[in-house]
Length: 233
Image (cartoon, rainbow, N blue to C red; front, side, top):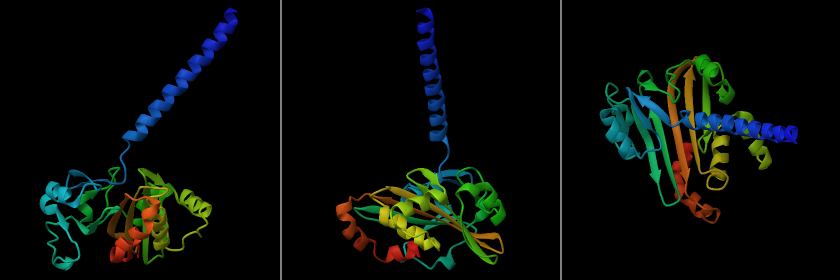
């Protein structure tokens, strides 16, 4: 009888141990910085905040451009490190496009500098990197769905399961994410870094949060309008 009790006690102990290990890994995962967290001139920000809040926090380091403002070439590069190329909010979704104007001033979510070369980006994010272009002009994208970075293999699997062809260009991915927003996912964030001769020339964040139900999809696409062409082109 004692051996049987010891056997069950051993099973319980192992189960408790595995539960504790799982909880520890879960806590670590929850504490890991996510793509929307960046640092501008030493100030930590979250790109999910509204532009007005970011502008207040970053002061002269941030510039809100809605399309009706002065042309971007008149921005004072000595002051503006980071700007919002466009912001769109409606009843069904929020959409922001942010651009890093000063690579030296910005650190990414994991502390990596925004001005890394193509090879450095690839080495840092190889598992999650979506790569496009050629030797002269290329880009690397990182995609986060509902708080989790996703690998190209996983995204292509999702597309295949939904009967969608594997993407040939970046806009194919955006079109797919737009299709499933509000259905399979609520939020996506894309970091797209552009390189000329392997040197980083621009980094852009796309943030999209869908607050829609499937029945509203048709109205949602009507509301998206011209900004959809800008974001997903």
